[in-house]
Amino acid sequence: MSSSAPPTEVGDGETLARYIFWDDHIRKDLTLKPAAFIPYPYPDLSFTRHLGLSEQLIWGHGEEVAAIRGKPLLGRADVGVSPLRTWGLTPQAAPTGTNLHHVNVVGWPSDKPKQKIIAMEIAAIATFMPPPSHAAPPPTETPVAPAPTDEPHST
Image (cartoon, rainbow, N blue to C red; front, side, top):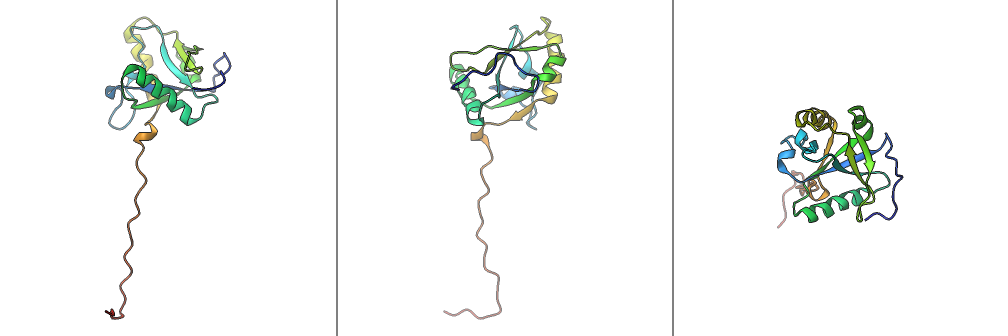
């Protein structure tokens, strides 16, 4: 979907997107639950780098994954790289055939309760972004009635 690959090294100042496909990963107040960030039983967690991508391309990658999984794209969680590193995680560039900005976040403890502790920290700082198709529609203009006057109406 994107034409040029980003640098191999994932920088501390970068932002990553984790696509959300499950209702039970999102609270009613649109914050994220830790379950969205638990890799168990896998050793890594998949993200897409924002670096050099337009919003349209970031969402496009999410739509591709949704189509492959046969699930609706409910949104994405944006997370900075630097905090991930403070929890001992390492984002590694892992380009795919359709997503040159794909990243695997590795370094998770193998113990699920320890993963959940880290996932709680990530969920607390992640920003949920609903997909553009779920954005609130623009307000409609309500016609304003003319102000009443003291003049009689002519027929």
